[in-house]
Image (cartoon, rainbow, N blue to C red):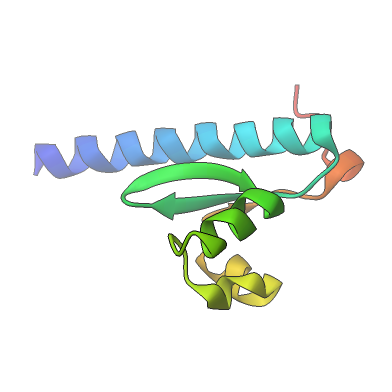
Length: 87
């Protein structure tokens, strides 16, 4: 029971940090970033990096469409300059 609570709270902490990183990267680069779980690890990637992983066959080719990608993404940042400053 305690192990489950610790694991869930650690996961929530990791998701919160990944969301903040995605928003910061989107604000700095002007591109949309996605938080995706790859091999039990959260990764913050932009579209070019995702297409490269699809070409390397690390991700499925159906993720080339934005609809499918947004279905599996844990979080999708707003594109570029539309990201609000939360500080």
